[in-house]
Length: 338
Image 1 (spheres, helix red, strand yellow):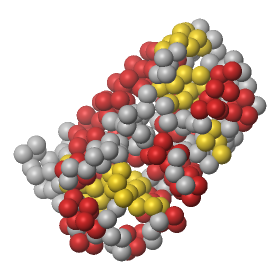
Image 2: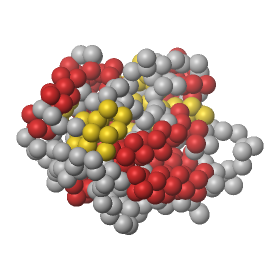
Image 3: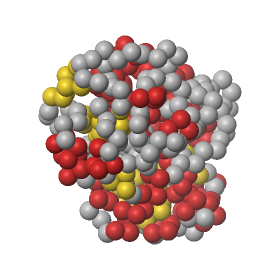
């Protein structure tokens, strides 16, 4: 079974745990402007675009949890989503006023004043239970497992969702959250809106016959000397391909999610552009600092200084703000297209 980056770091040395806390703890606005005619799903990447009509949950409902359980939800008055992508869904569905806490990866403006119930990247069961939630949303990467079981043992309905790692996961994830909160019609509306916005962005891409640029996804945390090159299971290839590129790690026959960055691996991948999280780029001193990393300056991307930063909270969230991410990536990737 493929492990997520969070799973990998959970068994790594303590310094990597601290690094992941930095990843989840801060998101910076990405740069770049929309191409002419490109869709603009929301005006501000640090805000959530909620549905215009606030739905009224119809409960109780019994829904499947990804860990094989059947969970009955009787109230959605006090919701706690345990990561940023799930919080994005709750707020996008128009139920943000029912959220009573957030984790450190929930960085958008509307959730900023909510109490944080994670320590570094791990859930505090005591913090969750102190806020008396009526329903808790998690996914397979939520941990530690002991905290999840402690929340359940207290009688709180907790639904685990499958992790989202590609565009095709967005619709089922929206449906699952909407069903758990008793607002399936709102889920259908949000899913259709998101699919439409993605289609609008993709309609602006260069013709299919044009050569697809290769894009390497790098995970960087300079403060802990963590430099990783994304492979086919990193979560980035689906975005890269949808934006009209090809994943350089996959093209170089890497396997798994991430591999340590080496000159040989990056030169072999030969990316035309490099995709990074904004905080990761900051951690190595910006583009100039990044060019000093192994092999970067020797790639077509390094020679052209084509580095594409997208803020940490949105890049791999695979949710209602994915159209924004896709637009930013496509704009930068095809900036010279005629």
